[in-house]
Image (cartoon, rainbow, N blue to C red; front, side, top):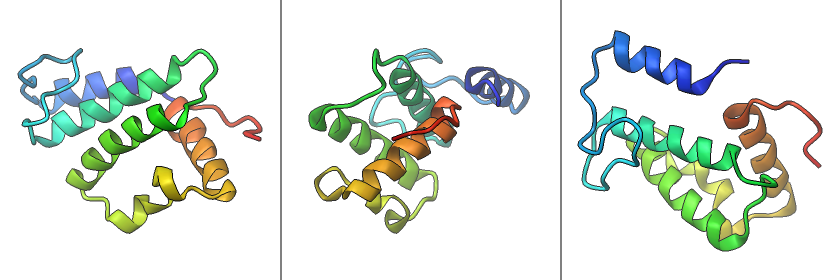
Length: 115
């Protein structure tokens, strides 16, 4: 496992990225289209998910996270087909399981049973 915050700090420091207008600890402005701003968006969203009381999202909150993550993932080079299965309106039971597993293993760093 790795610490996403430490990894992000190392990348931005060692690679010399300029801070977004809102700084490193605030969500970047929607008009900021740099790769580092989109990476920061994903890091902040990951931390918000990590610190949810039960790590569960209702449909409204899921849609908000999905919209923000989708925008940043596409800006970073992901294709819409790669993230379509996580669309809130069309999530099947299998997609919901896949989402929970993906978030827990890739963003939260947990590899426990995700049922």
